[in-house]
Length: 167
Ligand SMILES: [Zn+2]
Image 1 (cartoon, protein in one colour):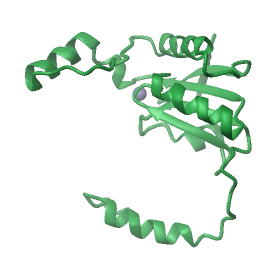
Image 2 (tube, helix red, strand yellow; image 1 turned 60 degrees about the vertical axis):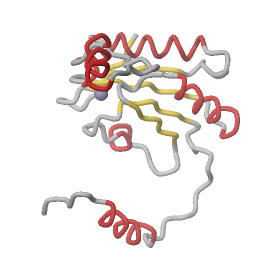
Image 3 (cartoon, helix red, strand yellow; image 1 turned 90 degrees about the vertical axis):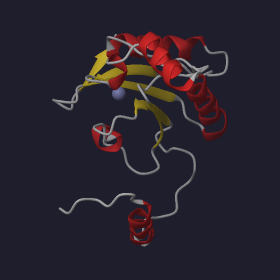
């Protein structure tokens, strides 16, 4: 396989022309499994493959850490209210970058370099299972996310590629 180009937008646009002609049917905007997945953005997690999800089955919300932030609450609120999802999976993982930097170090690094620190929290953690528990608690406590009877959390092992449920 040849090295991908950088920057890659032109190559990706050419890929899009090929992808758009693959004959796949037009889909509803409502996820057919009524599922939303919150996952870390880590590029080792191919979330559709990990879960055996097909196109159109789920909303996949990704950010650094797979953390339930206010913005994830925003998306889940819309997902449940207008697009019918009723189940949420939250996925963190081993070897996450957020376990390798601390809030204090991050903030002081930015402040020293830029003279300003962000309003938002880094959401660092040492144990990915604890991060999942924290996210589940935020979800359950949110007054905006009404359907929390089917919420489960997992840690994805980047070496075995297996999910372990967080209890
Ligand atoms: Zn991560």
